[in-house]
Image (tube, rainbow, N blue to C red; front, side, top):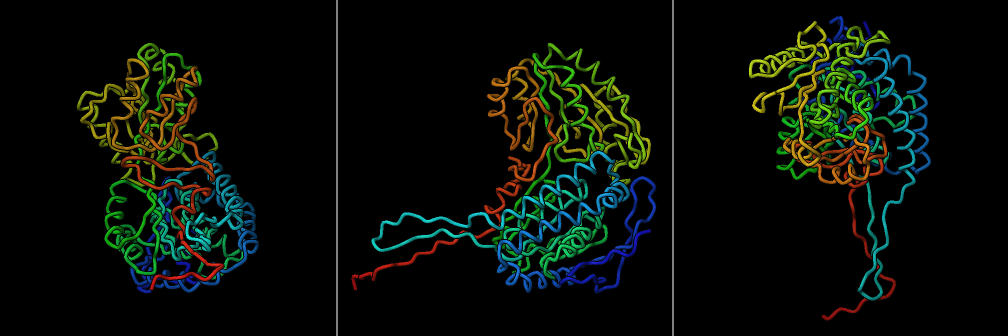
Length: 485
């Protein structure tokens, strides 16, 4: 059992004002990893005030001073690599491969974030008024509320912190109750070791069922100027409505129901491998995962046979085992949801080609076909190792089928005709398209985000200034101005 997990507020580890705690569980063994501070609105207010107090000094630091802290943070995380990999497995059921992906992403992100300190912060604008000079200057907004999920805990919490912080803001992070360490306090420890001033990053943890009170305080508190949220569309919509009432701008990365299109000229070996990876990496608990595989009728039979054979052999079990591909789902509720939605689809006429029977705490990699459109799994994001096979009659039909979803996060196209695929990509109603690749891709500098009900705004260090700085117009005169009265 790990030592108690406390809030990080104003540079100190502190218990909840209420004194309450709750257990953090291992999703594989259900053992208690740690007792975690159960925060509430009062703890959140303390964290916001600490962030506001730290803002003037942090935002005034020289670019080279801020850059050095990010470089040191990367080094601190790298030194703890083995520990972090173990924590990701123990806390979130993350296998060795995807855990390594998360750590490597975060190292690159931290090193790139340091360069934001020296990025241009404005421009000179042409002015028609004689004797005037005009500037458009970007400056940090102040306190940013960062709300991060559990499914790629290290990456998504780190992403919520790094861009705003590098631009001179301070942050209050609310991790998921499922990942208070890897998605929360670990980051506070890493930045503290790097020499970040006290209060520039604060973390408030909470018990299951208490996320709403923390989020409401973060959104409504007058000192918070921006909200960064990654999570479900249902929650994101409620948060956006609340933010709108307080005239605050949220950046939202929400649900996906992502399609991989396999055209008639596709390399089927590539298509099968890409589909298996995209659908079942991290047991399907990634917003970018392939949920629907839309295959041209001309290659449907061969693709299906090869894909089902590959999926049926994917190893399932302990996330600490290097051979494991599909580990445990995050909790019993998640497992029961996958079970219920697969059962409903089958009762409505869907066929199970492989998998389909839970083996708690895991759900086996599952392929469904002939799923009727009224089945929940056909239109709702389902975090689990389930892929749906559909048939398309040509490229135009495949795009039309993909665009039927109310979500628009990411898509993939497998085709030998890359220029034709590029034309199809422009017609897909999604924020991200990968040609001759599957849907699970990200890099710190890329404009990550979706369309429609998959959110708005873009995550990515090169685009962070658009959401996490204020644009100010400044004029100055080099000659006296005459006035008409």
